[in-house]
Image (cartoon, rainbow over all chains, first blue to last red; front, side, top):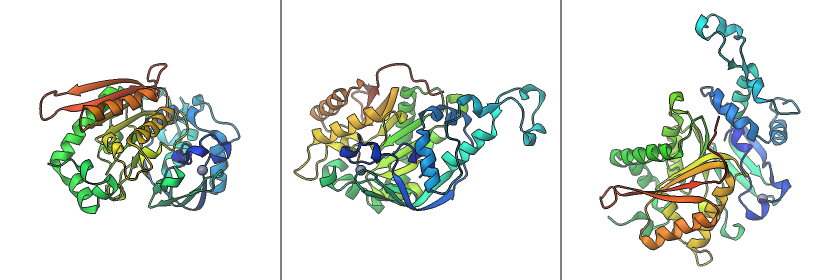
Length: 147
Length: 213
Ligand SMILES: [Zn+2]
């Protein structure tokens, strides 16, 4: 499960939906892995305003990932018109002034879309229910008395 | 051919054998792909979007969402729900790009409000009418699903559910539950009167155009 998804998933119990303690779900005994993906700059730009930044920071802290800045970056920070050094050789005159992914965007891509929780548990801070994650698949089936 | 949803609940029907059969049948694959493309065109997404796939199965639709070219507004990122562990196992083997949840959409949609730009569901919603125990009703399951889906979509978001109702009563039950949840709803029927008849429930969350970009 991608770190991105952890920023959107909630406890499946209806009673928890309204409780601030229920979000974000707390990762426990998490085994992480990096699954490489093509960068999709327009997707990151689309989803950035929808992130709960404080929850993202908390989850990154609990998983021992990088420290994030205290406030969310603005969409303007995702692109730069200055070619990155590594790209300079490949940039031809025509697209030298096209907006390019900034280092921040690359870092967000790695964090949100490539860093995944392969196994562990997600725990609701309101009801204490534990959702198992195995081989990247989260089990959100509830026993009928909890629906 | 008996309708699978009349014989067993989907988590039992789609065991390891049927899941593998479903995924390798080229006829089913091509129908599923055709319906996914139709649903995508109805979603009318203009930029890379976050999409919920309800009843994602082995990820056949998801692989199409992941491979929409930039010139056509993609590629999209998706999260899939399915009640069949066997189907999700096949999705894992196929290295599905989306995140996979073993979940029963009849229990609700476990994402915070405004998560998704769009949702698709191919040949799954009629399963929600199956009731396993005396404690829940088809109406209750449909209401939980559609109200959960409504909340999980952002304003201006859209969902397209292709489904196979058993009869007109079930069709009305499903459409009624979607409207009660707050959706603007329209039913599109392709190939009426033919063996290839397909029903698409097109749902909109009021306010604004689909932006995604
Ligand atoms: Zn809970």
